[in-house]
Length: 102
Image (cartoon, rainbow, N blue to C red):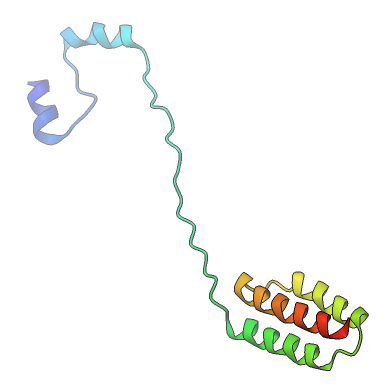
């Protein structure tokens, strides 16, 4: 009967007298923890704030007159938090301006 109740109603923990001794000998069974798999979604699309910052760097590049100022702007770009796509565009522009100033 206990077996029928387990199958019919999905009940666990019901044992009869015959199974009692077997379960005592088995001890406690604890399942191994399974690693949690998380999906990381990276949104590398520029926001309006990124685009405004990008435009500001371009304006500053256009006004640069010396290498010291250009290098200072380059450091700011590295720490700006812009998406890599925009940083790479600014780095390319940086190289062009640096070549012109040299």
